[in-house]
Amino acid sequence: MTETALHRSHPDIINRLKRAEGHLRSIIAMLEAGKPCAEIANQLKAVENAITAAKRTLIHDHIDHCLGLGGEDELAELRAMARLL
Image (cartoon, rainbow, N blue to C red; front, side, top):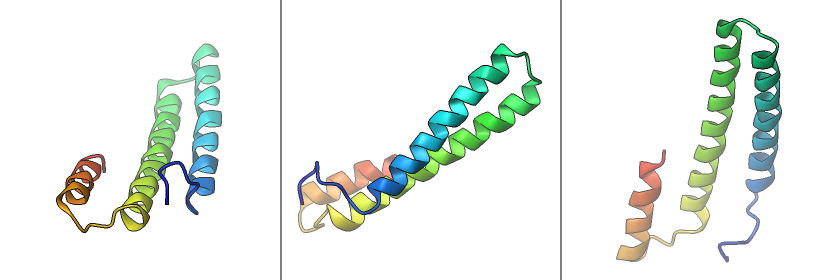
């Protein structure tokens, strides 16, 4: 599988990121409208969680489907990916 191939998880990740993008636009509007900081912080946390979940899904998919774990190069890549979790 090439690095540019679409993985089965990519459509789900794309949907998550598009939702997060929409939430970010809403947060900007909230800031511009002078909404309470606690509400804004709560929405920022939701976006942060969505992005973290998307990242974790992407990394787990990469580990499961792209790394052969047969050599030192693959193990080094696994270690690098694990630091991103």
